[in-house]
Image 1 (tube, helix red, strand yellow):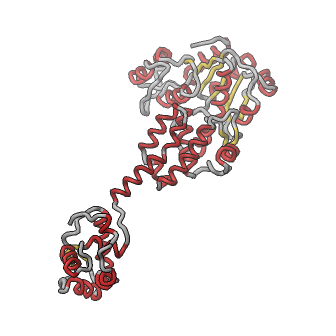
Image 2: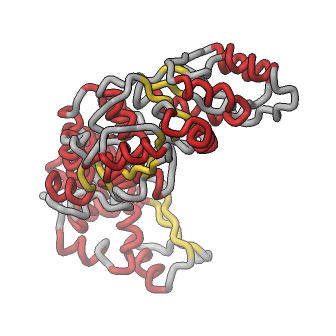
Image 3: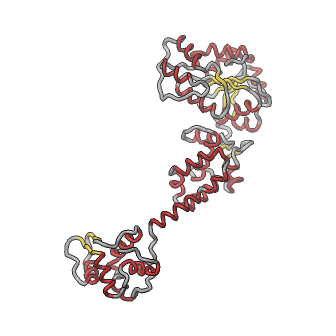
Length: 420
């Protein structure tokens, strides 16, 4: 069958009363629906359509339509060519089956046309991302290519609103000075709960925040808190902490440094009252054993030291960024294993540092001095500060923890000199 034209679809030549009595029979609804689905897909209205387990009334309606019995098997089969022929010859629908079904059920939206309109609408939904800063363009392209937005928004209309709000939030980030997440949401989006966990908007904005700040992949409540904090949005300014020794610049820090004791700083303290002074060099370690031993050995004479205690927390990042912006040179040391290299890489993506006894040469020397070092495990990674370091780890295949080279680290901090 040829596809019908617009004038035919309007049913101008269809005898509506006779059509309603014949094809409009309630027991032929299944047949009309099958025809309509074919029309939506631009499929030909030819060949048989079959109804399994028909009722007696449905068989009788098909017999009246065709003027003969369509069969007595367990299923009911009707040829669309035959129905089309009946409608044409009877004059009920001179142009056949398609305009008859349109007259009964209304205009048919072709699926191809629907999909084309939806594609245009989805493309339009992303227009607000074009207003974002250039460093987010790669993230915006990735968002267009993956299925996250379609899963969250479902429709292009909902997606357009979601992305407009996302763009509004991201244009205001990072927040400086840091603010609470609800306060930011209330100011930027008019709803203090707009960025609550689990909302589609929070999911997309947090994805953009990570692209903006370089925060690494992860999961869980702690990770989300740190990710928000990387852009200056504080979900909990007291839970995120950083361990320090030998820093000055506030009355509390001065007192603890004079006593030679470690200090735990909260994110709240660092955002409200950061250190007012910045030493020339600040050492950074991965494990708290290094800091505790430095306090025991060097006491008040210890050089400034910051301990990450694993992945850099929001408090640690806030402190190190502040010190770096004030002119401090950061010197980092971590475990010589794949996990240690990942922690160091995550820190380097967010704040600049130079290695502190943390190069391939240092690893080889430590491995040679540690004949019983445990075997290296895990998935290899890179080291932007020294590309030779991963090569050395792969070659020697042992892990060297910070505690293994503790004496050299403590000596460096006691001397108070810059060590690379």
